Length: 128
Ligand SMILES: [Zn+2]
Image 1: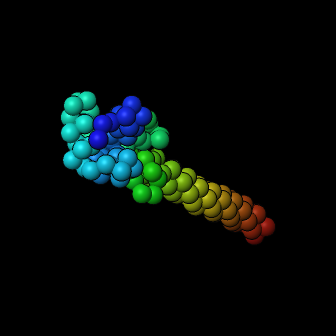
Image 2: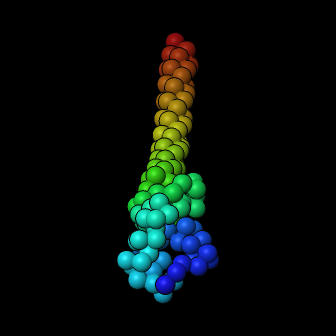
């Protein structure tokens, strides 16, 4: 059966879906699609276009994000970096709160020390 122009257009546009998918869509045999692709020098190698970066890749897009391996890895790295920033901020806040308490305690110690010294001085004065 001769290939009609729209079938050739379809093959060229969807070659990346693979021979089986194209054959099934056109109602032709896998062999017929392979022969026609070969004549047109069109690759039937499975390919996917990443909606994030727009690259055509030859491994399936990630099931969760729908992105290529590179975009998915970059997204998980960014997520990890966000978590890292949040934890770092929490840690700094905690350390800062403890430092404030220690500074306050030091101020109280110093004040107590100063008052005791003053008290000793006054008592000595009264006894003399
Ligand atoms: Zn991508």
